[in-house]
Length: 167
Image (cartoon, rainbow, N blue to C red; front, side):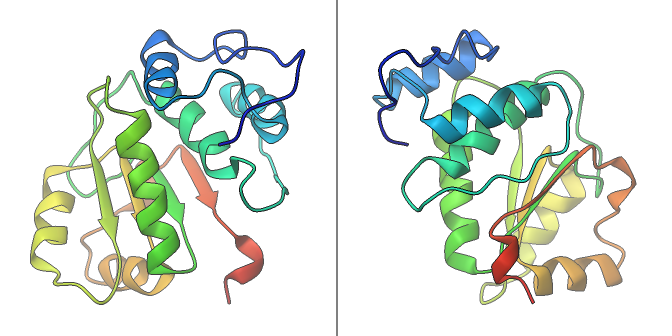
């Protein structure tokens, strides 16, 4: 994220819970960027959204922050993630996972990063325990789905990150 412009609403004014606002402050941010100011309220209201903004404007936080807020209540079940974020590359998926770790540090949500190029044993253990947030690349998600290790019936939030790069 980058610093917002004068007159921007605060993260609290956007409707985010105290735990998320505290994590954002811990990361050194005081005001939301324009994409965050526009996207966060829509996501909190459970509305569909297509967001387009330049690199470095805080797009990832624009969906990560409200997802953390929305998932505070409820519980993960084995093999049934509550949210899925589909990323076109391992690198982007890893960056998104880092954002969840940074902004979700004051809440008790579980996350799994499911990407190719790494062993499947640890991924399987996480899926079997259940996760609130599943961040995945398409190939690895399809692989786990076909094996019956990921059931998508419980997904209430679905994000396609960098949709223009998915093939």
